[in-house]
Image (cartoon, rainbow, N blue to C red; front, side, top):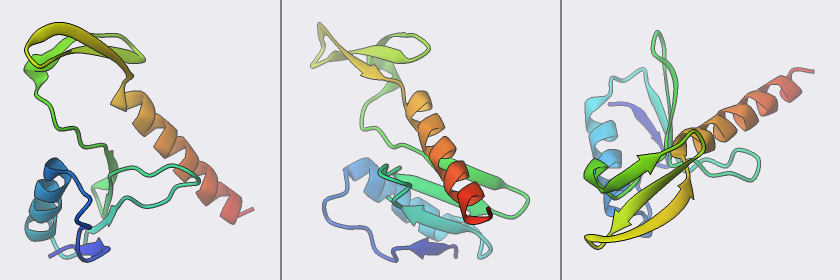
Length: 113
């Protein structure tokens, strides 16, 4: 079983986050470390997973289905809500995860300078 930090998920977590927390805590090998909402500067990615020979994975969990996506662009996407053709523009999770990675990398480099 992987080392999970913290060892229990807060009640405020979404259903998707709770499900993924359970999967990660029971399915990953012992040599993995999983952080739930770690602070990376002033950002809070949902999960960071670190494993030898695996590397680092940053996950942002969303509670909607791929079929709800209307269109995607490099830094934004639109999705249908409530089965109506209403579209909501959001920054893509890819851009958000890049920001997490960039800040995580900068923190690491600054600690070694």
